[in-house]
Image (cartoon, rainbow, N blue to C red; front, side, top):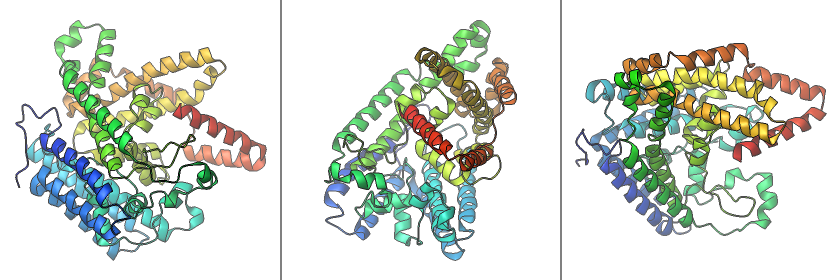
Amino acid sequence: MTPLTLTPPFPLLCLQVNFVVCQLCALISAFWFRIFLHPSKTSPFIRHVVATVLGLYFALFCFGWYALHFLLQSGLTYGIMILTGVEHMHKYCLVVALSYLSLCQITRVYVFDYGMYSADFTGPMMVITQKITSLAFEIHDGMARKEEHLTAGQKILAIRRIPSLLEYFSYNCNFMGILAGPTCSYNDYIAFIEGEPRRHRELEADKQSKSKLRQDEPSPNVEVVRKVATSFFCLLVFLSVCKVFPVERNIDDDFIANTPFYAQVVYLYLSMLTTRPKYYFVWTLADAINNAAGFGFNGYDSNGAPRWDLISNLRILNIEFATSFKVFLDNWNIQTVQWLKRVCYERCPYHPTAATFILSAMWHGAYPGYYLTFLTGIVVTLAARAVRHKVRPHFLHSAAHKLLYDVITWAATQIAICYTVVPFVLLSVGPSLKFYRSWYFSLHIMCIVLAVVMPVKPRHLRLKEQQKSCSQDPDLKLLEAADTTYSHKEKTS
């Protein structure tokens, strides 16, 4: 089988024809899978087999025999799960899966096609790596840790038995997510295959409100149509404007010498803004495929309307109107952020922010620009956290002050994001440093100064102080709960 490819000068702007064709075929297959292989009509075994075979077929069509890496990586880590004890299995799987991925990325970048995105078989391997490591940590939580030591989220996702080989390959290589993800938890996937999508997420609040909500199985058709329309609109926007504002112009000597600094700032924002729709296209279409198969149902909202955002990877409006670095990251590549949080941030005892950014850089690949982006992201995150903790409270006394703060922080967030991710697009060290030199490393310096002048205590120390205060004064628990509710409403508004 020979995969369709485009000539390097015109790679459909990083979106290959074979990828789009396969995703459209996956969308059609997803409707067929939901209608004709519904859990009420067939067994989980058949659903696992069909999902796996279709996934491997699409992978072979897109990447040829490079798709064997998906099986090798999954098979190698499954052997580790079987042969090693649950006490240390999660660590071995993380090291082996990440090392295998890194080896493939280094080989592809430095042996085959540096700077080219064509036939990047490591893209699906990045998602499979997430699934392998998530599963290993969830098995460790369910079989090696005591219940009282788990967080509420870990209790929901904990796995109490080793999956069968078929379940494991179905989870990693199913046709709905093998090409573009998104990552999902193993429990969510198995519940979907077996026809009980919410069984392990039934909380008391859900149970109490069950009688008020519809009990029939909701149809995803309207949501799928909306997401498919959104994805292709984003594709059209990307194809229309991506050449108008090339990112490389930010480091053009004539542009730097003859353009006022304020115009450089505006152009930076526009050039990075026009790179995002391609990600919106890929991730929204991938979400639609999963929904078309019946996967992604996340219960009902307060009005009784079904929610199909269980494995959504982005919230476009929240990204474009983010007023803080954290809000932007929380709404961009959501499932990857959740993976980093569950595997690294929540478990790392020292410097979790730095460790999380480093893991993210390693996972993304071998281009030096990735590491520059994530190292810059560390200092920007620390500065943004300092501003939020020290400055923001002074603007919450009136609606006008809050609006002023939001406008200023929106502009600052967008520029900070653009400044941070330029090396991610340019890939190489030389061009990236040239860009930062043209800005005199101004945001690096500003962020370091803010982090030093307005230090924020590490997360684990803040939590300890909070717990100590609550234990000394029970009334503070009510204040803490109220603050948490307020923050949640603010984040989702």
